[in-house]
Length: 192
Image (cartoon, rainbow, N blue to C red; front, side):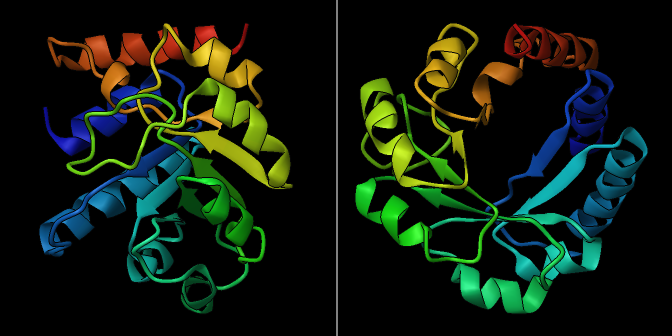
């Protein structure tokens, strides 16, 4: 399944936010795919978010998600301007407190559970630590890391405003119909 097929299936399933998470070289082919995804998101009324790359986010009119080792949020804000959404990943109390002084619209906090989407993940926080840390941020908090259909409700009950999902979104068979159905399943779960 191509990135365009996956994006289309997720949007057909009703996702309201779609992030393109790409850690490698952002060449012409990927930019063209990102342009297509941006148009698909616009037609679907969904927010499109680019990982790490302020320049690409600005070119595409997309939101930007930054990690701790990426361009500092204040510098990224100079690139994307005041209108585009910026999110910022945090992994502990110190980083969450520091994020309160950054020009970001939301913070991600985690990993809440063990995750397979990072080669060198930060230490797992757990639901109790999420509950303890949540009051520190006045911004929306998106829980990240190992979020599944089995644990998402407890993560939201612990104070997360939203969850980010990678692994549990993609069904084993990888078919477009399966991805759309899994997205619909996630939205039903989160609307309870």
